[in-house]
Amino acid sequence: MKTSFLFSATASILALCSTGSMYGQPSGQEEAGYTPTRENMESREQFRDDRLGIFIHWGVYSMLATGEWTMTTRNIDYREYAKLAGGFYPAGFNAEEWVSAIKASGAGYICFTTRHHDGFSMFDSAVTSYDIMDASPFRRDIVAELAEECHRQGIDIHFYYSLIDWGREDAPRGRTGLGTGRPEDTVDKDAYFEFMKAQLTELLTGYGPVRAIWFDGHWDQDRNPDFDWRYDELYSLVHSLQPACLVGNNHHLNPFPGEDIQIFERDLPGENSAGLSGQDVSLDLPLETCQTMNGMWGYKITDQDYKSVRTLIRYLAGAAGRDANLLLNIGPQPDGRIPDQALDRMAGIGEWLSRYGHTIYGTRGGEMTPRDWGVMTRKGNVRYVHIMNLKDNTLFVPLDSGKVIKAVCLNDGTEPGFLQDNDGVLLKLGRIPTETDMIIELTLEEKQKGGVS
Ligand code: GLC
Image (tube, rainbow, N blue to C red):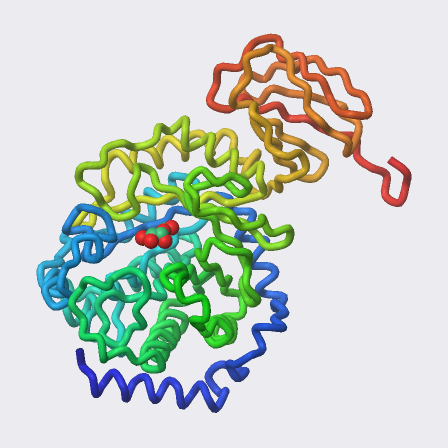
């Protein structure tokens, strides 16, 4: 590491920070009484409207091809692990191809791992030499190329940023990364937080508008309940550099002050099959759940067990019906190319969204709680009933928000018969649904402004 440079660059950024001139407001305790700005509230709504994002886990760990946790699960010495960077030359990386394929999936944003738990920075960072410019022969700022291409193609960029680091000597030790051979007496929490703040400053000042910072790793200290993650400092730094930037944290707990979205991992909000989602579902923050396309986040050469397009579409509709976004992960190969299986799934989802996207994008969920048979989304005076698992040709849908004046099956254009009473509407589908998602569009009578409905 370029230690002296590290400290001088950090120091100058912090000097600017303490004058408040760079950030517009001093960082500090104000996140406890955090009031989001108007731009932030608008950004939350745009985020909600997108409904689908693509998560990208890519780093030097991709070369080991066993996922992103290999450094700690195999207890690899941090000095040996760092040598991976010297062989990282992803000749097939092409931001234009990535963003085009992701846009074609119908996603509205990309969340990219700028620095994962192994500590390698995929961007040009002045506060470490363990980054793509100094430690790898590739010497291309991957984050810059990706962010520029996202801005050019009109898709939002979010940055994943790990709070933990298995390779830095100064990083606080939690319950992971303990076998990577670091000396025990080098922990320097203050220096580590200054490093993170300097990197977040780089990410939020050098790459144009960033719609979200996606923190991860909080759970590493779950055996040290008194550990202070200094979120007041980190979150207020993000908001002061880019007020519209949404703060999310994959801590698996109820939202903390200063957070703008609530994140779930590997489960739809309200479900907990993976054991990571015991938290309450926020009633006011936008929701997002992240899910793998196969079984792993980072590239895993032996995992060809990709979920089908049908399964993924149902997951997306299930998320929308719970008023949540789906952040669907892909793990690019060591050569920088997206695996064919992932390209195939993205194309399939995109094809479906090109027909039915209006029942997902810009909708809100939550009017009817999820059912075994499916979910409902809504937009204005229209309700979209997504039927994904039904063994009958008739379906009762609870609904008390207005009188249905028309029902159309969007898959085949037919108009199913219906009977409505105060409890809901009985749909006479005429057949047992077999499609991935049979969507019945219900149009409700427009309510008179100021009148009684
Ligand atoms: C977990 C994993 C991490 C992954 C993240 C994505 O926190 O530790 O590797 O990046 O989930 O949701």
